[in-house]
Length: 257
Image (tube, rainbow, N blue to C red; front, top):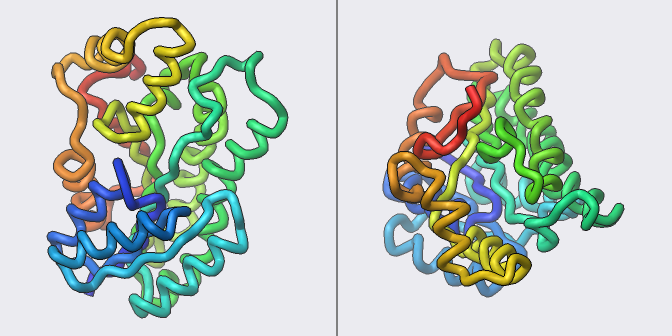
């Protein structure tokens, strides 16, 4: 049995990954803050695979994460794969001078503390079963920081260090930790971000989408969450020799080495 918990998985990146795993006979728990989205996504995925459950959860609330992991273990019997995905702060895109202390507190909770908490919660069972795969989803902008994504880039950059440190400590239990640095994917969240940026620049959505997304990608297309990310996550799940690293999947977008 293959059992996975995927956070923020009722639309966009997380939902695409959930579809890919559901088609490969994974038993899944999917999450969202919206009860309506959870219910709708569970119904949709159960057409592919009946072993799907959903739970509302808030990535910035540590108690909520405890309840999520407890629910997942109860439904699945354990967790073999944890994919830590998040939405974006509503304040982004924004420049440093436009951010507040509250924005920073929220961002650190969303990107970093949620990953730390979820990891702490799933590790005991993974150690016991001597198998686990933990994947943190991040962005190419961690390698090539962008001023308009200052909140996200600073808050989730430490995930690379976290994966490296944990890979040293837990390799003996056959638990791997990796970070995926994502490029541009066709998701509602990405479009909302570009809409806010277009409004700030007083340009059309199409103009900014072309400037900030399409023109940056050498392969000439944006990523598909199910086809592109799903395949990579399945590959990492099957590998027992890739750990403590970060992997770019961005169509050649970033110029960083």
